[in-house]
Amino acid sequence: MRFIATALIFFNIAFQSSFSQLQGQHSTLSLKDCMEIALKRNTDIRLSEQRVNASSADLTNAFGSFLPSINLNAGFTRQYGGNNVNINGQIIPIPQENIKPNSYNMGAQAQLPIFTGFSREANYSAAKNNLESQYLQMEQTAELVKINIYKQYVDVVEKMQIVKLRRQDFEMGKNELERIRANYEAGIIPIADVYAQEAELGSRELQIVAAENSVELAKATLMTTMGVPPDLSWQFLESSIPSTIEDREIKEFRTQYGSINQVVELAMQQRFDYRASNNNISAAESGITAAKSGYLPTLAAYGGWSWANYELDNVSDLGRSYIGLNISLPLFDNFNTNARIQNAELSLASRQIEKENLEFNIRTSIQSAFLNLEAAEKQIDISKRALKSAQQNHDAVQERYRVGISTLLELNEANRQLLTAQLNSITYVYSYLKAQKQILFEIGKFD
Image (cartoon, rainbow, N blue to C red):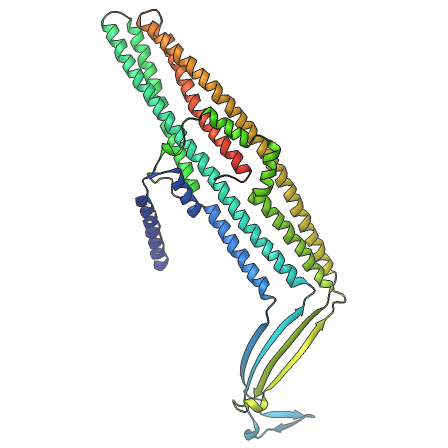
């Protein structure tokens, strides 16, 4: 128990030390920094790497079936008792000088399969395709992690922008409260306006707290995807993500990726998971070939050397060498080969259906991504016009309030409309960026 407790303490110290070093290496992270950390530490990627390593070992094992197998053995036996022999019920003692209790043996044998009914060729092909499939799946996992990192980083930046906007709104509210108090003390407005503005300021402060909490939650989600503890006090660069989108950029992207059919064709050529499905089908086809080899004969060559004696001598005189061929022809194997063929064909059918489902999912995801992109384009256009109108309305109501024509209620309502338009403008820009990157991810061109 002491050993276990000591080991746990040591592991905890090492674990904390590693993250302390990680914390010391980074303070403010760009989007590129987050990507690099995630590619090294994300658990899904690390698991995919282990699958690639296992598939690589399977390929090496499949290649080994083309090589000879070599065995070396040696043995020693000592006999106790048994100094008499029974001949027709007559017990006859054996003279002690004729008893040799020790016996020794040595041997070496090599066997080389010459023909295995094409099973080893099929197994090697299947292992090769499985390795390629696992590698492509690892690449697809990395792409998925990167798009998630991008979206989550955008969420962090978006929420940080919202916090800034709400703080600015709060400061404007404080300035407005000071002006209202001054007007009240001068006898220009009633005390009710002071109370109303104080209540409005309290509401804005609560919204700041909620916005700040949203930032911390977004950071925790991002850091979890990166594979680091979410309690590390890291900051993130807002400049890694553009805060505005020009109409020219929107048109250029539409010109390059305007046709859904064109994008679907690109996806089938470039997506790692779709290419991996082709390798899975090839591996399953090889599995059928390997299963059918059970109906074919096998041929193997073998050779070796053996020696046995009661004493450790006369190795050259008593040793013998041999070579030979062994052919095996299956006549009836209790329908085992037939069962293996049926299972292999089922595996192939499953892989083909999986590919078909994947193609449907890709088409659906691309269509959904284009719909989201189109909606984001419209939202950006509408939000620009709405922001301009809200700003003009706010300025007009504020001026009327200053000269006593408008009420404080109207001013606060105009301010809320302006703030909503500003928040929408931020949200829709980042929604467009995520929709744009989602399309690139769907066609296998996310960078």
